[in-house]
Length: 146
Length: 146
Image (cartoon, rainbow over all chains, first blue to last red; front, side, top):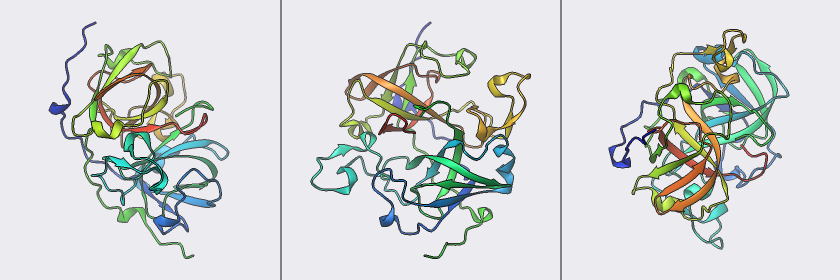
C-alpha cells in the first residue's frame, strides 16, 4: 500500500477544543503542584458540563481513568527545560519531559475514581490546580496502558 | 485552603491547538484501524515540523512514548457508542470507551521508539491513519504510567 505524502509544513489548523468540564479541588497554587507523580494530593472533583454528562455512562468507582486537561498556565513557546525545574538537571526537549510548558499544554493524569455523583466524578491524587479545564476522560484498558 | 468556585457553564474557550507534525504510515483507511490495541500494525513515522524538532532532545530508541494525536475524522457530537462498533455491545458513554467519536477527539497511543532521525521518529504498532496530526509527545514515567 503506498504511503501518502505529507509534509508538516502543510499542516492545517485544527478545530477548536471544547472544555467538557473543570477540575475543582483545594490545589489553587501551581507552585504547590508536585513536580512528579505523587499520591499525597487528596481528592478532586471533575465537574462535567450538563452538555457532556451523558458521556459518563459506564464509568464506575474503583476504576482508573486517564484524564486529559488543558494546562492553561503553560508557556507554549518553550521547547526545552531543566527537568523538575532544577537548573542542576541538564536541559531536555519538552517532549522528553512532562513539563506543562510545551506547544500544546495537554495534561495527562491517570487517577482512580472514588465516587460518581451524576455529572461529577471524585478522583484521588490529581496533580492539576482547581479551575483547570477538562478535555477528555478515557478508561484504562490494561495495567501498562497509556 | 478554600475551594475556588467553578461552574462548567462559565468555561472559557481554549487557545487553538498547534499540530507539531503528522503521522506517516501505510495505514490509510480508518476501517483498517484495529478496534482494540494490537501490535500487528507495523511501523509508522512521526514527522515533526522543523519548528518543534528541538523539543525531541533526550528521547531515545527503546523508550516508550505516549503520543497524543487529533483524530480529525471523529464525530464530535457523539456521546454514547456501542463499544468496538458492535451493535451487540450495550451502549456506553464515550468517556467509558476509547471511541474516536467524542467531544475532543484526542487520540492516546503508547508506542515504543524504534529509531530517531533528526526531526522524525519511527514507532511500532501505532493505530492511527497516515496524515493524522500530532499534538504532543510525552515520555512514559513508569510501567503503569498513563
